[in-house]
Image (cartoon, rainbow, N blue to C red):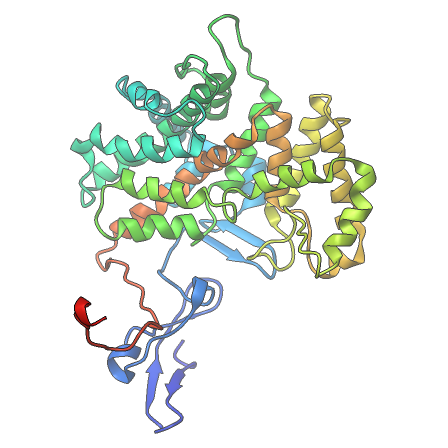
Length: 431
């Protein structure tokens, strides 16, 4: 970046500060504003951090204008086509795709860590029968440090590796247990002979009274969904994990903070909003009137599951999962389900209507993931926990990247204060 320079100038007095440009492998440069306060006595102001880099990272790259998503340099479409979720998890954690021996060792490590401590059952019993599964996930994951406190030295590389394997392995077991608790069914133990997604489906849907056979089409669709959701750069929940982790807290607490952030309807709950929208529309015959309201800016009606804050062209993940969505619906014989038929009608209109095309309001990954989850029999309140399972590998990788950085500092955003000016307290007798 030697041929590019940027400066911040105070137009009132001409005082100038040079801002070093921090270049990366791809994408825009970041301007180092770390000295702005010390030199000029001002802060930079960027609500929502939409133009601010909080860190340097080698994990994920997004180009929203071009619809690009890369994990460690690999296009997500290629990973979804040629790899399974465990391969992608290894890649995100370690920076390279595994060879056969590395994959076998990593896969076995994950399988052998899937069981949770029996005493955690008592934690689940403490939740009310109708507690939201995300409430259970937040609490249970936060409690894991009480069981594995002997390997929570953030500065120990081996401890970080053990934590990574445990967290990725146990989150499906915890989510499945939350599902069973919600529906009053007995917990089902993991099976080490099953792959990652098949094991999750078994723990969720198997019951002691009868045998359960995992549908390979369902497991494959879930595997692809998990790959697509594995990481997404510095999103709200990942940034939350990094911020909590910057304090030096134990890693389980940091991940629990990410789960709490993901729970928000503007983040991980977006696919729930899609299903609620379909319920409100009710019938295919109501779609034209609904779409008319969407186009009317005064109506306040939003088309959920279409468009994306980051992707200004199209969500590359949506193209991949669309194929899986239609394959699952056809395989399960649910392509004639009224609500799913309604969803497909919305998709048809959004892909052909000039209004939506001009605004890049194409179906995103949340639109299709909600439909797939519904088709697989996964209830709406489990949609966000499913997202959390997939995103855990990204959270863990970002946490490891951050705490292994010798230059790590505790996160401490600034503010523009808008409260009362300095004033004196009047004794209560005089008020």
